[in-house]
Image 1: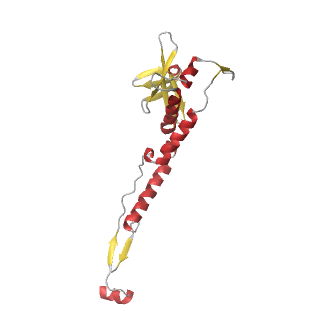
Image 2: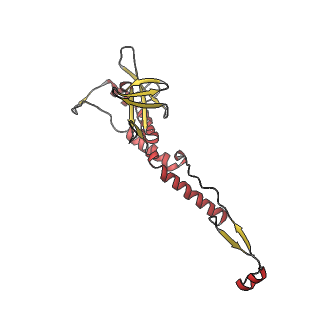
Image 3: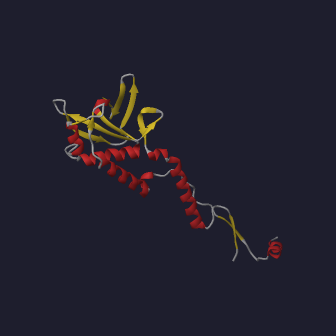
Length: 196
């Protein structure tokens, strides 16, 4: 049979090789993509540089002791700029930037302590929004909450732009895997006929 094919097709010997590319991956950690990390850094730093003011409901600017926490020292270990940058980067990366408002014995705001992403959930009921941080329920006036995109499943919670782009990240990961397979094997998983 091989002699018959060689006379018709004009070649002497053939080897059929099936090259199977690596399995495509649809899971990608966006925080390993340099462009995503840099975008979060740039946006959070630029937003943290903006001036902070306190306004009444009718738009009148007023002086407040809270301004010192935002503009000078948010806590004993964090400047106001670093605090605003951290909260903004958390909102961009996880959808929610949460900080605990710590008060002194007189009830005045003493410092603002950021809470790591994933440590908080927000619940809404007839009495308003409540936050659960490390198993403890807190009222909305005990927390600063900065959100990114509203979550349609929970009006008290937000989504990040990264969550909104999950399908695009998965497609990019599949494209990269297909390109890597093409470069390594010279094929995309099809039958290749090679001869000496």
